[in-house]
Length: 105
Image (cartoon, rainbow, N blue to C red):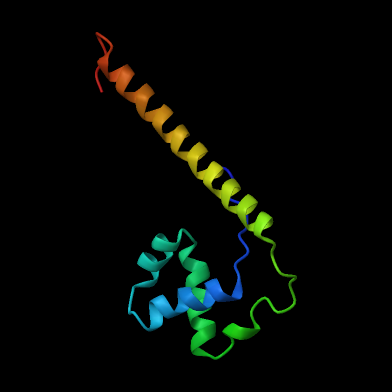
């Protein structure tokens, strides 16, 4: 399986993601899916927010430029597309093998 590049999020994005869970009562897994991010990351953010530590998260990191954020998003999308392609290749081979005469699944 291909490694999905680590994403860096802006402070505003983190706050909005946490608000989606805490204020709008959206389950963490659903919110993470909607935001195309890791559920574990969002769970960590929510936990830090409940302890009042969300604002200090990432304080030592330099800000991410728009270009870096776009590059990271595109790398993540490419890794996901490759994974889906590999799954489809395997499914196609399985179906083709099942349709060969004289084979039984």
